[in-house]
Image (cartoon, rainbow, N blue to C red; front, side, top):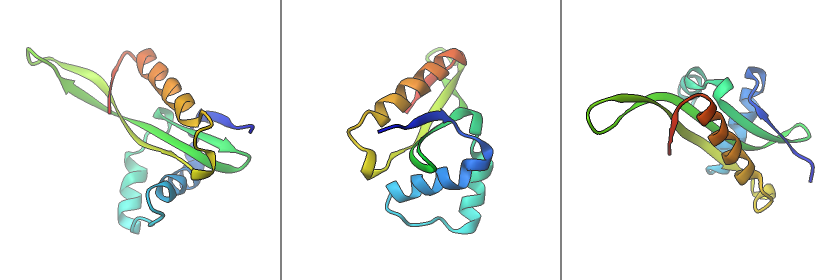
Length: 114
């Protein structure tokens, strides 16, 4: 299996999101909810795994701040939108995405929150 793990390009969002929807039951969001999700998605903070022109894995990290003991707010990454196509499970796709995402979060100087 040859796959390409890369940061999401804004132009790939529809295919990336459709892969996520399929993994979570295949029910498409209503147009209004889909547009809200598109507006909230930060492509530079998302990764996808592509097998040819098909998206087979998704993961994203929303920007937010996390309160810690003492009341400080620290930058954090809200890990979300994680999926792997049934055709590509148990092949290291999820492990590769999570390793990449956790490395990116660390490079951004944030903590991760799932």
